[in-house]
Length: 354
Image (cartoon, rainbow, N blue to C red; front, side, top):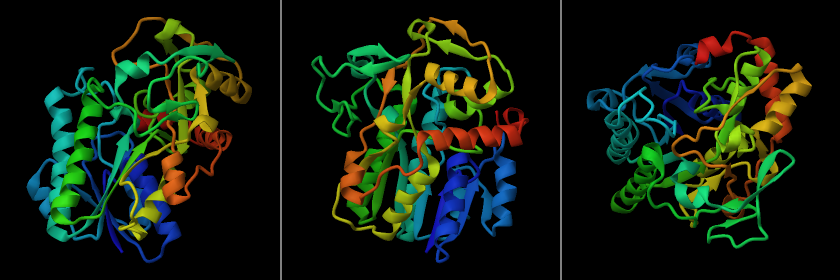
């Protein structure tokens, strides 16, 4: 099986490539990247050492895509994954739409031309922000916790946010590009008889994740704590109670491999892929973990609210469990410890990757 990975030198693309090579000798991996992210060159050297063909290409440029080798599957791991993209001054609103949505169109056209399957890595950020921000919460053990004793809206339970939760605007520019990409992928699947899977991913993590607060909060927090760099609890009273669930990238890779080997399984094409309630942690709790692991470090507080911030995001992945018998196998503790070891072995990682 020939597999093409977009954004192959990012954390997720690189991790998927390495996992697929380890687990299936019948898979031939190639990929491309635009190398604008810090840390990309480091991953390119590692992938090339494994025999992966890595090309320089911009997925917005038709001639770059036309030059890519034919594949039987495309894994779309290229995206600007910041919820503040298009608003934080790092790129324009037009750029994020061209990159995230226009890039999806390019890859779907590639799949149509080569009769390839398409696997889209989407996001929890397709879910509507106002109902997420208004979910009933209480604080317990330094973390926001869904108050299940109060009335909850459809699509959310103590297990987390399910695929039936609303996706109406606003979801952020980033979230809207991914939601539109999902719809286009399903339309191409129907119109051109292409196998398509859409995995709405929670917060992914693992050793080697690039250290940015908006795209790799677990790596950023642990590396910054170990290096005694400034850290800050932002919003929600500056207490650090906001919660996210964590999924090790190799657990995602297990599902991706199964999906490519079973392209016509008669199940829902879109599913949450996340750590769920058992892998959820607040920033304050993560700080306590870091303190036990690395010693004390002061964290500042800034109560100012930011656009699109939400207090709690835990995804219910029971549909993936039902459809694929898939559940996370790598515990939260194992994931955090893996990042901590990487931190100790690579004290310069923040400079390299952020």
